[in-house]
Length: 109
Image (tube, rainbow, N blue to C red; front, side):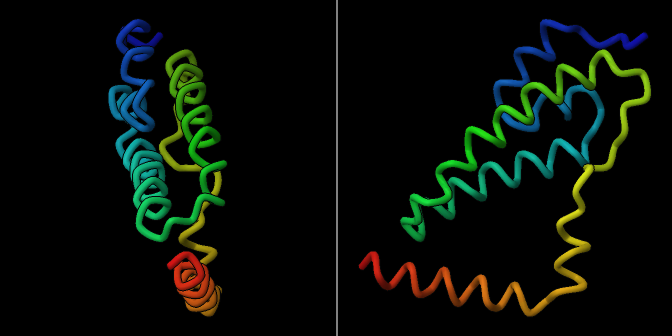
């Protein structure tokens, strides 16, 4: 049985990743928090409103996963999708993605 407070987990879960950090899942919490706030930064900097759909998805995943992790006895630390491993095997997609973001950014000016 987990000794963490359900009320505090619920409260912290309103900030993506903070609920996971409260539960001790630091790697997962910082990954989710970084993804959420980097998405906000990217949307505002590049003025790429197309990424706006990702924010509610990230928030909902974080919120419900933190509450589910509270009740789960075998809380796994790792994320189910390791995007960094994919990019290590396909580094050319980072370049193509940056080129596309640059083109989209010049069209917004």
